Length: 410
Image 1 (cartoon, rainbow, N blue to C red):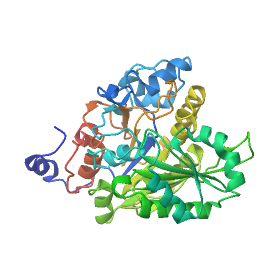
Image 2: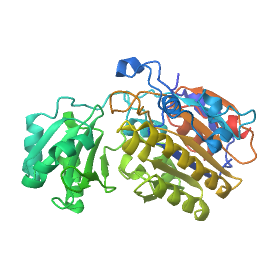
Image 3: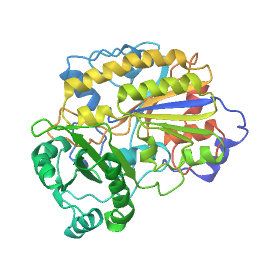
Image 4: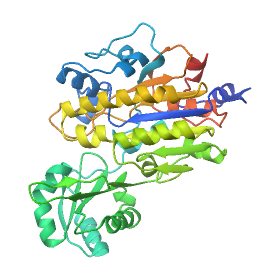
């Protein structure tokens, strides 16, 4: 069982006043799944394996940093050695939430699994929702179907330029996405539209996990989405570990879209980013300069948005190899009392026919300088990460998750 009992909670916290780690730095490799979960067939994802299939597609991955940490010890990956003495503790985490998207993955990592699926609209949104969008924005709606973002912009971008109508679409995930050319709907106006849709339309039966605005530029035949995307998420329905960290006066810093995912709740600072490179640069600066106790959590979104959803296996592989090199530069910046956790939020296997997220395990690497890497096995829930953070900072345990702090600190 992943839900704690009161007796278990008491044993976890009794006598724990001092922190083992002053800072916990978590890097979420967005969509870097590690093999299909046992229930993947229920989601149409039987046989999916983001890391494994990319490695095969690419003829092997060159990931020396992740290999040294123990990535190849989690499962066999072409090109990634299973080293004898990994520097990090290593394992996989299973998702118990009903879903396979960014919101459910991150919320579960923070100790708040989602057992009631968010609503999805594979046939498009009801006429009443479309009418409400038009009424609120003063613009017509085109699209209104499940589609790839790049494909629907290519198909409807010219009509949008001509009419000013908003391109509204969804996917297999619980999202309402609005695309508009930055010359037609300026980014500030599009952000305001996203916020209003979140607050006034996407509630109740239509409470999708995220409202996403998708600005683009260019001309017909050459439209390109910009980095000015913004997500408007629901708030988690229960307290998360980041709420408890903030309430305890500890640092909670989000990098990338972390602030969006948690609707700003629980954060003491947020640094939106434009790319994986920008995210890693921002993270390195924070690790080097910000020494307060607490959590730094970064999301590297391009694995998902640029490569997974576009079925770009080669691009995905190159992006993994680039971040591997950046991790090599990050490790020396960590202090002796830092814990670095590398994981993911779901899969998005680019070798599958579809372009949607995939229901997969996620990798788990936990590195602390001078501490031996141990096998953490298969964790029953992403919430084990939240339980570990809570135990480290002597916070009140959350209802879900089992800490692995003793495994890595013992």
